[in-house]
Length: 93
Image (cartoon, helix red, strand yellow):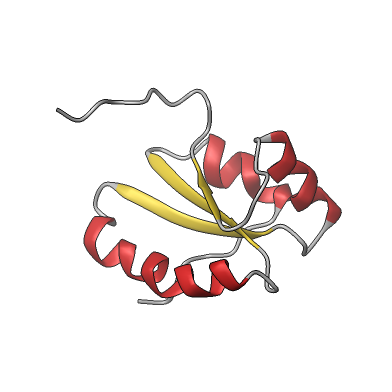
């Protein structure tokens, strides 16, 4: 496993919006202790779910564009895994 790709705002359209399937995007920042604690868990998810989901991450502080994108998606805290609003939420019974 090569690890989960860290994308930039410039590639968001291609990597997330135009993806052929479901994508989970984690927004994170280096100084966030919660992000560092969550990282090993998030890194293992593709081992279990890569057949159904694609996993990506974005460092919100790497560029102002990344931060604006995260804020535009409603991210107020990190670490935050988001799904685009257009995806329909399903209920488990």
